[in-house]
Length: 113
Length: 108
Image (tube, rainbow over all chains, first blue to last red; front, top):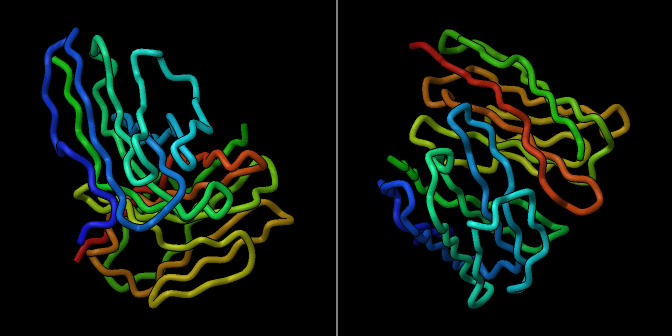
């Protein structure tokens, strides 16, 4: 069974649309993350949730809104998509915020046309 | 935040060769991890190594926390080792900062 699963794997959409990416982990971890990987492979953290509470919110446009209905799920909703949002988005989880060995999902490749 | 520098940025090896990848940090980190991103994009955690040395098969890692660097050793490289190797560290608030990676190609 996949430990951290993201859906969809690929997302192609037009500028201005709203889209969501879902993430679920079955590891029993308390902490979940969203990362953005740009075309040069640079990985940057966007958000971190610990037990459904927002812990880290890096400099991310407020068009991006994470939602954690329970500690096993962390979804990412993006409003009014822009060309610059095209990237690979990775979800990850860790036991806790301090003991943060990261387990990554397979990534969602978002292409905004 | 901390700065993370990885070297070399690119590395090309013949199968069977050994290599050393380096990660330097601008500040002392309280946790440090190495990852491998395979050519299909999957990110796999290789080591959680805030200090000391660990080994896993042909891979080993050493972190010298007082000197703010970590090394990843790959011995007898195989084509399946190709991909990008990232290190990441965090200080205090536990926000992981990633280096820009070392892109490795292993030729048969």
